[in-house]
Image (cartoon, rainbow, N blue to C red; front, side, top):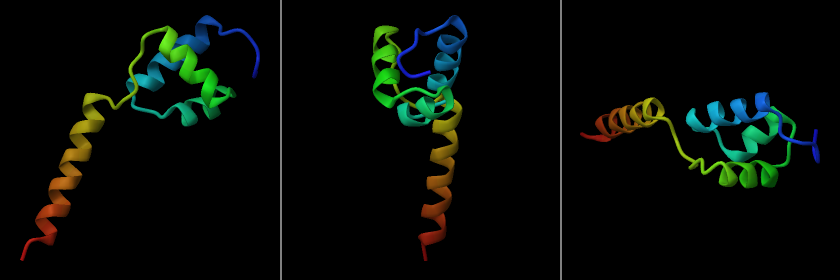
Length: 72
């Protein structure tokens, strides 16, 4: 699909993937597009890269467990 137009389904998937915290490269693979194409479309839609709140919470929990294990 590289070089083709972005369809409504592609944009909806892009929004879901960004909300889930996926990287542009991973989104590109899922949508069969170049990472740069995903970056440009995300910027055009004003979608900020990052993690979902649920993923952020999970990562914080994991880090806390690792810190607890490393304490004497």
